[in-house]
Image (cartoon, rainbow, N blue to C red; front, side, top):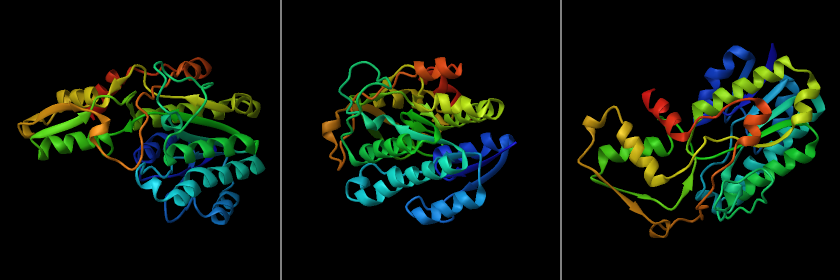
Length: 292
């Protein structure tokens, strides 16, 4: 059994990883303040003391708007910290699994992005996540970077907000010009667990040969407005909602510090073909998530 260091436990993905990775080995799962991605020296000491076979980094600075005014903090957590993890992973022959985002793209492509498309982030969050990818890639460690989109759970994120609004507001306005692929945190955690299982059964050269960036998001795509409509349709506690009405809106109607890419769908074909995993359609995944 492998020793797994999981960094990040209280976010949407980290919380799900606690359940899916527990049976796969000796898991050391930590979050702030026990681990601080902005503390490079402390991060190096942690990895060297634990000596994991696999490092799963589920921690990130994810406040897209606040990142515009906290650039250095976002960069320390999203770029420098993952780079340090990669350097330490290289020294101990560990594999690093890291998560990135559709926000590395500018959202001007009308078809889903593939891994060979040129990133062009339009906000600080996306820029720092891209820098993290680049630092990992040049480290020389064995790594898998999974880019995903619109991660959610019923506990937090967009779905949780829509359910809350349905119980507190009569009118809900959701943008209909931001389009991507909603992807459940639980699904990403299950995919990660499958990857860890594969790593455990394959020779060390396997993951080194396959190291790289993979798009890993649900198939199909929708607007945030259409996503919200489906969330409300599938709400098992709909009897508790107000007499709300859902209306489409334009991104330009909401003033935010950070720009959002309008079309950031990802093509996950490379991941599916490489690892022989079929990723479900976003609506099928949402239906399962709403039953939880």
